[in-house]
Image (cartoon, rainbow, N blue to C red; front, side):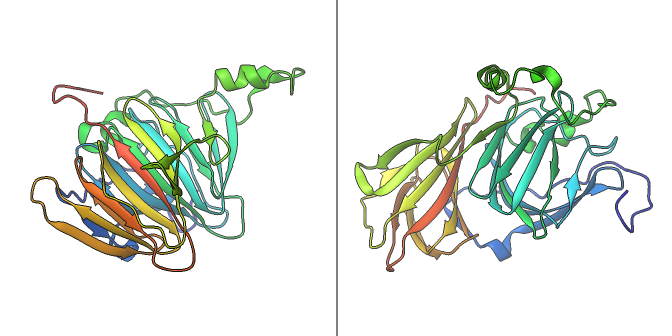
Length: 298
């Protein structure tokens, strides 16, 4: 029971859906704010950057000791690929259907695919902030619209006993059957952006619907523009990063200096250049989505 909440669970409130069709800067303090949850599920605060027909991006926060579970009115099971990127604190994430529990520290990410029930917990004394990339997005019926059609998960487990008396020898077996995939710097596929070692890009997630990458840009970096093949959202995590984005349809430019928490929405076909003007490097997360056919259903 959430302190101060006595009302019975109801239907989940719809998440705001800010939508853009040209390169757009979204400052963290300009995001659409949202609260979801009830007495059974717990309360979560969202800052929604973008929610188009291709990609859904938000930052959510759990208070110290906070958590979210599922309830009849807030079923946490979706028909999408979802990446949680921990920006601050620690996220303990659980698959309560199968008992899998993983600890995700700041700088790490966790990927789960469709039909994965999930609960989240903040065990720390400070806030846990998580950047979420979600595709196909809720506008395609993959979030609460889909969740209400799923049977309620009645039995909950927070321990996976399949590996009892076989640990750590069973690590490879667990990894092969995992539903919660913890990824990050050590597991990324690293490369140079435009063959330039001053701009490192590490792919952490790459599925049919969603790609997530880490960008590290050196102090003083300058580069030529490159075309984005997928609709993307870039969120700065460290330093100051200039974005110089040319829209493919209008040939107009969107230029801004982004600080941690600020984002740029970048439609497919955008010509993007990033620069660092100061003496300190910058880092970012980039999530990209690919559209599903018009007649696609969850």
